Image 1 (cartoon, rainbow, N blue to C red):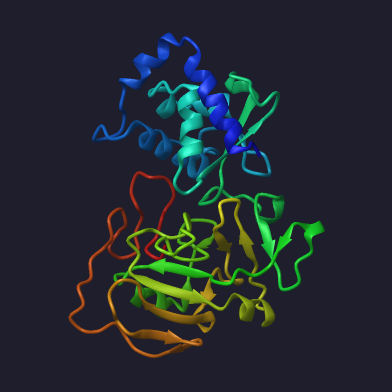
Image 2 (cartoon, one colour):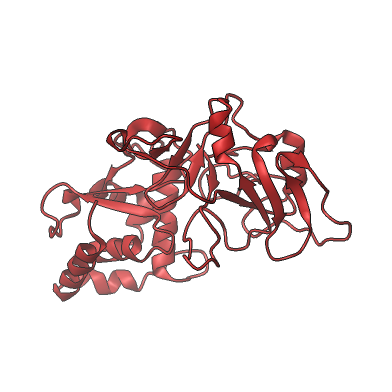
Length: 297
């Protein structure tokens, strides 16, 4: 992977080059409400690389990389006329490290044909977890197999609106993506975890990953390049509630809902419950943002 410092240096180099199309393209803010151009480009990249590359006939290699030149030719992105400089900025400035770039030639090339790009996680496009895109989490990690140890904390963030259905269904499900997503901490922690949980999550589901590996339910766990813990779940595509180490409210005190795999309490009566922004109220899709994102993420 390219060192972020080299990306920054290449971005600086691109800024110094004359680019007649660059100024005109930056006038096109894109997006439904204008918005920040980098955010608009990032959303388009996510939609394509996570969900629509196959239907757009853009090939992904086993690691999830696509030719940048073909990505930029995809009509929704082409209509925004992004420059290579702007794509590099999207990759380098992403607060959740959503993307990775890989050079096919020299790392200082300014030709999109010399670059590959991928989404680090969040796919609904079927990619093999053990293809090298992700690192396997193991009780006894073997560095030669690119395995990693169990993180100290594994936590899934969800919402009051979705918690009853999670309990009813017996656990966490990928809900249209390839994996259930977990983080190794909270965004407000000292280490500043950057990905794996939405900042407005209301319920914290702490997972006993070690127990799930020891009990041999054939649940595989993975770590993405940007530090997100992922799993496809068991044979039924579920992370069972028996692996819920603890479930608590994040910012609102609702007490302990689950402890050591056992139900403790329901959500308190009178608690304000509403569907979070961008998600359906009963676990439906997110709309025009790619895959069928259900209510449990």
